[in-house]
Length: 222
Image (tube, rainbow, N blue to C red; front, side, top):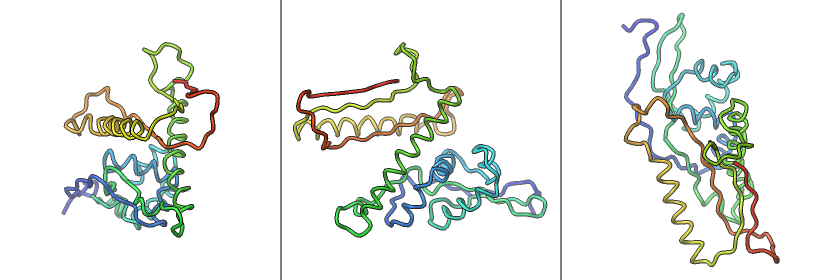
C-alpha cells in the first residue's frame, strides 16, 4: 500500500491534438480561467491545490472549472494520493493542442454565430489576459524603443494582396507557426533553465476594411 503522501501516477502522454466538435465544449473552453488551467496542464500534471496557488485562486473556486473540463473530456486524472484521508487527484490535459471543427463555424449552420463568438473569445480574451499578466509581472514592456531589448511584439497591419500572394503568404506563415510550436519538442522535460513559455496569437484574413487612399496602414508597438 502506498504511503499516504505518495502520488500514484499512471503513464500518460497527451494526444497531439483534440478537436472540439460541439458548441457546448466550445463554450467550456471560452472561459479565461479554464483556458489558463488547460495551458498549465499542458506543461505538466498538477493537483487542484497546485493550480490554485499558481492562479492565485482558492481551490474551492477551481473545482467547478475542473469538473466541467473533466466532464467534457478536456482533462483527465493521471495520478492520485491520499492526504489526511482525502483522495487528491492530479490532472493533465487530454491533448497538447485544441482545435475547433470548422463545420461549427460554417455560415448558415445552427449556432454558427455563437460558435464564432466563442472561438474569438477563446483566442483573443486569453491573449489579452495573458498580456496583462505579463505586463504586471514586468515580463514585457510595450514602451521599449530599442528593438534589441524588446521581449514582445504587438502588431497590426493591413495591405493589398492578390489571391496567389495571400495563399503563398499563408503557407509561409503556417510554416513559422509550426516551427514555433515544435522548436523544442526534442527537449521536452530537459529544457535549459532560462527557457520560458512564450505566447503567439495570429489572425490572417481578408478584410472588409475600405482604404481608398493607401495600400497599407499600420500601427505597431513592441
